[in-house]
Image 1: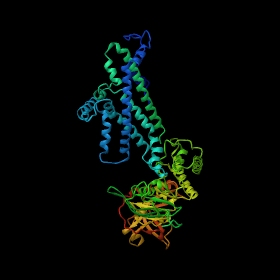
Image 2: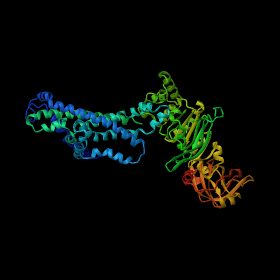
Image 3: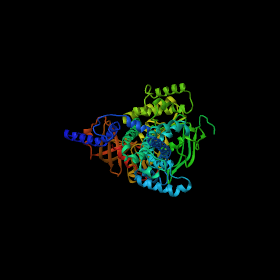
Image 4: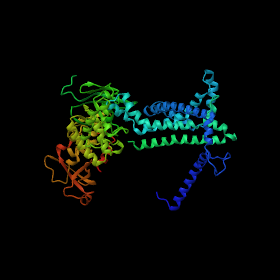
Length: 270
Length: 360
C-alpha cells in the first residue's frame, strides 16, 4: 500500500504523539527519582541518589517487594501447571464441554478485577476460613493465578496448534516411548512458549492491585499495595518515585523477553 | 505362522474402523508382498489413510487384525512396530537440525553417537541432502523437507515404509521428479513401500500393485495395467482414468451386447479408415474439443446416446485445426477387445468431478 507524503507524516505524527503520551509520564517518574528537589521542581536543578538510598533502607518497601516476588512466583507456578494441562486437554482430546472449558479458562482475564476480588474475598471469608484456609499470602497467590493461568494457557495452546499434532506421532513412529517423546519433542517444542507465558504471568501478578486488595490477609502487603497506601504521605513521595521506577524496569524486562522469545520461536517454526 | 519368504510383509484381515457412527473402513482384506511398491488409491474419505494409520499403529482397529511379516501387531503401539511413516506434512521436529531429525530414531534406540552420525549422514546422502545437516527444517524448501522425512524414516531400516500422500504438497515438476526418485530409492533399499494417494497417475506410474479404495472398501487390487485395462467396477473405471462407459441402449446398439462396458479414450480412433472385422465402429458428433498440447481430447456424443471421450496424439494436428472440428459428425472405431465388460451395474457415484477433470 502506498500513502501520500502528507498522510505518511500525519500517521507518523499521530504515532509519536500516542507513544509520547504513554511513555513521557513514565520517563518523568524515572527522572524524578533522581531529582534532588523534594517538591520535584521541573526541570530538575540538582541530582541525587538519596531517594534510592532511602528506598533501599525502607523496610516496608523491601518487605513488600519480597512479598510481591513470592506471590508472583507462586501464581506463576500454579499457572504453568494448570495452564499447560488445560491446553493439552483442549488441543488433544475431543470431550463434552470442551468449548465451555476453553471459554471458562480464558474468562478471568476479561472479568473486572473488582468482581474477581469481591468473589474471592467472600469465598475465603465465608467458605474457606471456617475450614482453616484464611486470607493470607496463599489467597493472594490463588487470586493472581486465576488470570495468570490464562496467559500460560493461551501461549501453550497457540504453540500446540502451530506445531501440529503429529510431532508426537512421528516421534512414536520412530520408536520413542511416551517419556522419550515428552523429553525430546513435546517439552522442547513448548519450552519457549512456557517461558514466555511464565514471564507474562509474573508480570501480570507483580503489578496487580485490585484482586490483591480483596484477597490479601492481614500483614500481607505487596509492592503495589504499599505504594498505594504511601502515595499520599508527602514525606514518602520521593521514595514512591524510586519504587515506581523499580517497578517499571521490573515489568518491562520480562515483557520484553517474553516477546523476544515468542518472536524467535515462531520465526523458526515449520 | 512363521516368517518365510512367502509371508507377506503386511497382511490385513477383516479390518474395520468406525469413528462414532461413521464407518471409515468397512472390512479390508489385503496382502502386500515383501519388497513391493504398493499404492492405496482412492478419493478423500475412502478410508485409505485410516488403513495406513492402522498399519502404523496410530489408530486401533474396531475389528480385524494387522499382521507384519506374519506377526500379529494389532494391539501394539507405534514404537513397537517395525514400520515407519512419512507424514503428509512431514512432521519434522522444528527444534532440531536436519541431522538431529534424521538421527532421532537411532537416538531413542540408544545407538552410539558416532554410529548415529555416520548413518544419518549416509541417509542424507541417499536422499541427496548431504551438506544440509546443520540446517533447521524451516530453512528448507518443500522438496527438501520431503527428503528429510524420507531419510528420517529410512535410517532406522524398517521392514515397511508407509507414505501418506508423500508428494501431495509439492508442485507438479517436483512431484514428477520425486516419483522417479522414490521408485529408484525403493529399488535401492529394497524395503516394502506402501503409499497413499488420490492421484491415479501417481499410483499407476510408481507402484507394482494398486488397491483402489472407495467407501471404506477395496474395489479392486491389481497391477496398474490390470486396474487400468480391466476395471472391476464402474467406480474403478471412472477413478482410474477417464470414465468412458457404454451401458443400456447404447451398449446394445453399438456393441450388440447387454451390460456396462468401458473403453479407454486412447484406444479410440477418430475418423479412421472403415472398421475392420476386429473393430467396433460408432457414429456421433463432436461436442467439445480440448487441446492439451501433446494431445487433444474430443468429447463425442454418439448417435446411440452415450458420450465418449477420445484422446488423440497431435501428430499432424494443431490447436487451430482441431478447434474447427467442434460440431462436425465423426465415426469412432476401436478394437472390439478394448471394450471391457465392467461387472457391476452402473450406480450413480459422485464421480462427475473426475470425468470433468478428464476433459481438462
